[in-house]
Image 1 (cartoon, rainbow, N blue to C red):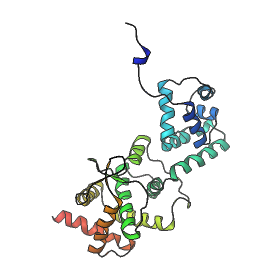
Image 2: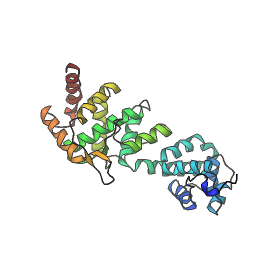
Image 3: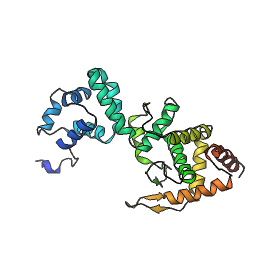
Image 4: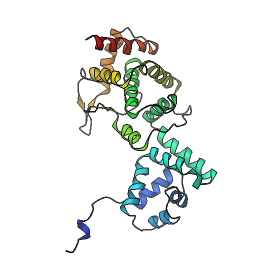
Length: 262
């Protein structure tokens, strides 16, 4: 039987323009990128000149385009393939790409505090409470991402999937990515919530979210809007007499005790 090529995989192949974006985003040359990937030196050059990558090679390139964390992991694993200058230049670029997003800066600040001994799911709980207490106490979002509603209770799915897929590296968090106020809030959240294991924090967040009104974002995703979160947790502040971030410790201590006694 004759096979029609058009009936084969409809999988999208990365374009030369997208490969160019990888080179620019991570400040890496064509030959060095090919070396990092373990390919022939001219492979990327050929793709830029019009050759079509195989599905396998296209997928690898698309992964590092969409996930700076995966590129960082690749860079650290294969840095001996590069000159010191090329490695340092690309490392600065990929760290900037990851940490310029406030939610990633917050997540990797937490990772750094634990020396990497933390799961992607547990980070979600801490990010959630950093966001809601920032809204309630400071009247401003910590990061712009919306809190999604789903069966897995994963509020920030993109960063969760990236960490599950590429691992959780320990990144260097310089002062430029988080303010003193933001670091202080993250420290308070970590110091007071990390006393409790994942089951306790899961029960706590599930209970809280069961009392929240569900909205829709512009893409019709089910979310807890920032206004809903702010108003709910302002009520929590009043109920538990939380006047500043130092008082946040009262919340998990009292709330979890109440859940156990219920």
